[in-house]
Image (cartoon, helix red, strand yellow):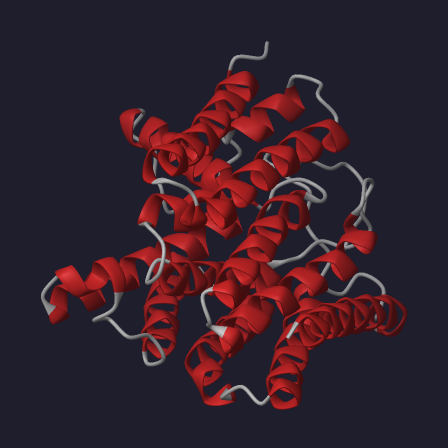
Amino acid sequence: MLITAIATALAAGAGAFVLIAALNRLLPTGMLAAGITDRSAHAHPARQFGGLGVVPAALFAAFIGCGLYGADAAALLGPATGMALLFALGMIDDIRDVGPFIKLPAQIASAALALTSLDPGAGWLGLLPSPLAYVVAMIVIVGFINLVNFMDGIDLISAAGAGTGLLFLGLSLLISGHATVGLMALALWGAMIGFGWHNRPKAKVFLGDSGSLPLGLAAGYLTLVAAQDIVLPAALLPFAYYLVDGLATLAMRLRDGENILQAHARHAYQHARRCGLNEWRIVTEIAVVTLTGGLAALLSPGMPPLLAWLFIGGGWLMAIALYWRFRLLS
């Protein structure tokens, strides 16, 4: 299993790296160029086609990895189809903004596709009536789609935050016997590493909606699968900083009467960047908190209950502390 997992991640990383490098050469100059607005964290030309390398490379490597290991790849069909739908939507949106009234129904449809591969009777969802379990699971996935999309606001943050989170989700899923989706998570992590080379400051390539939307769906779906075997706070822990920053910023915008469907630049990490903290410092701190939380999530199932909850609580406190560190800079 270990050899297959490593090979899957390496293949996805190499595939994403090569695809993005090729697209950078082959696509016409100016195509899929990211506009520079008052919300931008960059002031230099860059193009948003990283997802065109990440998503195909990750899905291809995941299916091949399942074939090599003998895992049932049919379990990937639901989330892979949902990711493909968002991949197509994201490509269109990266060229021309389609607006929230098209995006949201497409996100709901993609979440419904992903849920065809999820057992709603397992884990904490099994405590809910079946219709309610589906609704809650769909809200979680749609929430993650938007969370990862909105948090993709500076160079390398998606590789450091979402990518590292997917690594620990993948390891946790493999340990708990979910080989198919575990390989998918590790393939996505590998692809994000390959993308990260092109996205390092000052980035020439951004992830774009074609990458961030499918990545968010995968993160939400895989978190739900992981929560079938470990407690929910631990399953969410690899994305603790994303969740703290995303939910706290959402609450702040609601308090201020903003339209929460519109793009913005009010996240704590964006505030830190405007206050002069450079991208490398921000993403390194996010990666360290995500790494620590991921380790706590991975190790806590084998610990005595009290110690496990101390580790889980410590991971969440680190994420909250980092949020306030960024928010209180001036």
